Every structure is written in C-alpha cells, then in structure tokens.
Length: 124
Image 1 (cartoon, rainbow, N blue to C red):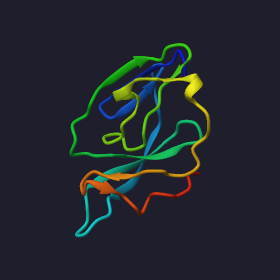
Image 2: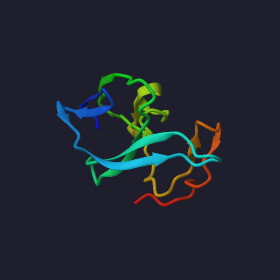
Image 3: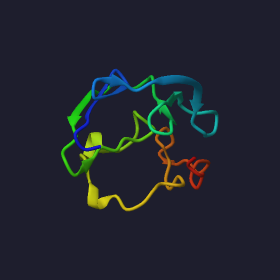
Image 4: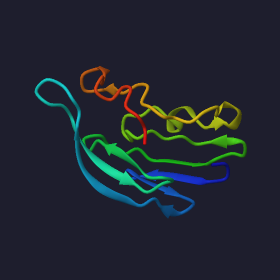
C-alpha cells in the first residue's frame, strides 16, 4: 500500500522491515507430457494468506521500492515468472476497480503455452 517499503531479496518478501511469514507447502510440478518444471510451493501469511511458487533453478532477483502515495505495489504468486510491479512499476489507485475471484490466465513457461488446468479456477 502507499508508503510501504517493499524488499524482495533472496526470494523472500519483507514489508517495512518485517519478513512476511513463509511456510513450506510442498512441491509444485507444472503440467505437461513427461512432467514439467519442479517448483517449491509456499504458504505466505500476508492478508488472508495465499500459496506461491518459487523456481529454485532461477537466480534470485533483488527488488526494493517505497510505494508512492496514491499507488499500489502488486506481486504475482509465481515469484520467478510473474510479470508484476517489479517489472512495470506501481499501479495508480484509480486503476483498482475490482477484486480477483478466478484465475484468468496461467502461463506454463516450460512449454511456452497456457496452463489450461489452472485457468478458470476460483481464488479463495
């Protein structure tokens, strides 16, 4: 939210100097013939809590920002594959017009196509 100091370092999220609690939730393997890429699944205690995945094969990318007034920082659940505020910047408050309730798109980067098994699933 506006004014927060957000740091993503060593694949861990810290907000205002406090690391966001993260618990192991097993392994995520992307779908596809013969199996797919293996990622680590975590449960992150931020807001209502949510699952995320981290690709251990990708190097950690560091990011740090203090969110400007009237702006919001958004971050995807696929920490090494999401296109989010780390790449294209913060989102103006006026652009926030609804609440996510289902997965609209999920991209399988190992097969370079949509992951049809996730598209349309409800977000709890």
